Amino acid sequence: MKFQLDKNGHRLLEAIFETNALSMEASNLLSTFLTDHYADIDDKRMNRFRYELSLSPEQAYYQAMLSVLDIDPEDEELRRIEKAGALCEARRLKPSTFRENPYLRAILIQEKRVGKWHLTKNYYAPYEGFLYDQTRADPERNFLSVDGLGYFDEKVDYPLVEEGNHVWMSVTPYEINTMAPAIERACGDVLALGLGLGYFPFMALRKKAVANVTVIEKDPKVVALFKEMILPQFPNKNIRIVLGDAFAYLDKNGSKFDYVFADVHSTPEDGLLPYRRFLSWKKKNLSVKADFWIEDSILVYFRRILIELMEEESTNEYERAEDAIGLLMDKLHHKFRDLVLQSSEDILKLLDDDSLKKILAETEN
Image (cartoon, rainbow, N blue to C red; front, side):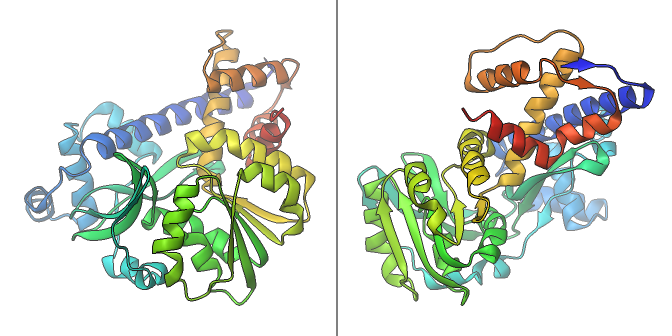
């Protein structure tokens, strides 16, 4: 990758580098909160900020979060993050809206173990923090990315399946919000890659536009758990479950369906490489409507990787790493060896969503 930029191009490139760094700082701050301090905010702390400082609930929650992280509100770096808009106030979600979800109203969760899998319930404590929607980037603000932090102000239960202490599947505001666009687009004969707790097929089958749903799941214990405890409660049972590898089935049969939805991952990080394979398939099957779960968040993650590569190459400091992301960066390094960026337009075009999808599809093999 070579840089032959004019002044405007250089300014834009530096602004994108800075915005990317601030977005990552904000994400790391939230990650620390959600990993180590998600349950540290209580009524006492909220009331301290809400009533003593006359703040709204959302403003009070933000100040409470900073306090549990031991961050001074006047900290200079925090002010830079806030000024960029990379860290937003948490959104107070309505428990009634969540509980009225059709799946949660219809499906009674009873505790059950099948092999290593455990179907059970967990709960959000009052003021417990969680992500409620995808991370999205704004191309009008140098691809600034912002995470959606939310909370309830009372205890709220939700269903999940865990393996040991690791949650693999759940139905939370995050799953509900991030699957809503796919459910809206589902039509005709639908193929779903990954079963989970059956939230997507349940919601898709509520639509008149959906005739049936075929689900591909590789783990027989997950299928057994679903068939015994959840499927009998489906009002619409036009669902077929196939035991097998999702992508092997997609490659062989995906073109026969009207709509495909892939949900074979838990996070943007572990979804990147499957998404790359999905895009390669999609490129060959343009007539099929198809979506990949949390696509926006995955593109944010991949764009950060590409921007990091651009920053290293702009200072001739590129070094190959041997992990999976390092190998991907090395592919990109070789792919763009002869690429010359000459203008702001070149930079923006390289980093837009369509470009990222094309790059990923081309580097799948």
